[in-house]
Image (tube, rainbow, N blue to C red; front, side, top):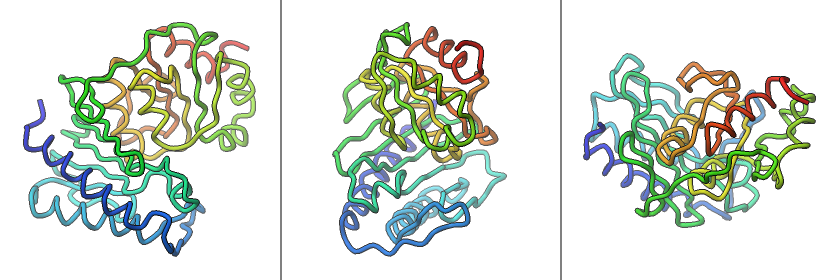
Length: 259
């Protein structure tokens, strides 16, 4: 199991990172655009710099993989993975559903996952072998087993439509309730039992690995579209489900096995 000091540090980092992000939120922001057209602001860079400084002081023998500044210590057994502002487009537009993501990995396997929602004052924590919590209270996925009766969130819908229109069409015909969405919060809502299934696309390791611990420790499943465990080398196509039965149905939907 992860050391208690890692868990305590993860929560401390989430706290000061959320406070820092809120200091920029709905203020004057200068956005640059990367080669993939994703935006980055001084908030993204500022938060990640603070996290890296903290980790460098407290865990100098650990690696760090962040969205804005890449990987340091890739050969280290223990590594922290961070997305300083998950949902920069939401952040830029004053929308409160942006997050802060942090994970701790051992030999590439996530042991701790944090999803902080700074504007909502919510911190989701997953620790391998210890379950998942929201602001310290235990949470658990729903017991929904049938996609026809479930709440399905479709993340990055326009990307799925552009690259896999057949998958998009099937997704929009399933679920009793469907919502189009972005970023980390739908997965957090799934872990808390409010959402039953999430299909996501074009993610990076710092996006999905912290989420995976929270979802799985809440009793759900989170894999790639082929049903394989998520790793640093996964291709960024993700499904989260509250139950084994729902997970199987999602895999069928994204892999053209049913109409």
